[in-house]
Length: 160
Image 1 (cartoon, rainbow, N blue to C red):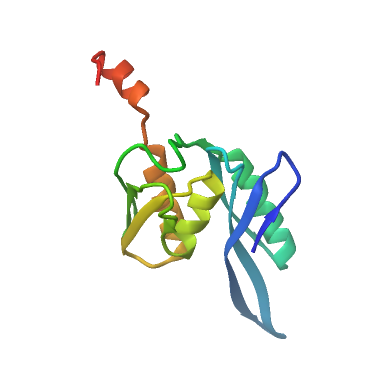
Image 2 (image 1 turned 30 degrees about the vertical axis):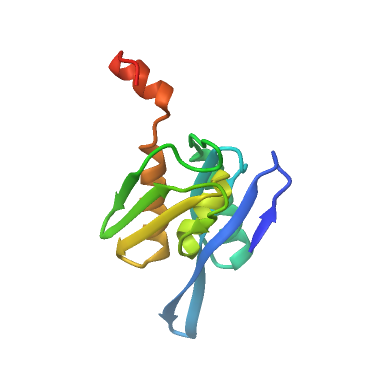
């Protein structure tokens, strides 16, 4: 599933491919929707959702959208700086920092986001919806909330 796309050294992971059928006069017409997560493995990650009549164009559209939606994630020693809860719709993802060597303890869709972001040691638990699209969006919401120790010191004006 994961592959190096070559452009800028991004790692591309196809999280989900959905097939949709529209019933027309001559039978069924199929279209496809692809959910893709890309990242550079050094703290930048993005997700995209593309739809087309064939699978490859839908994946290409999703990758193009993911490149536009990239965010910066603070990675400290292969993990995240603090506990965070991400929410989207009925989905909720809790992410906890872990000691080196723990690995990524997560489901498939949350794992794809963490690996693309360059995280190596993270504990996660998802609640509510099990829809991969919702879980990816909740995970991205969690990663957007992360702050480094320096950022918190600067924002509060206090030494932590």
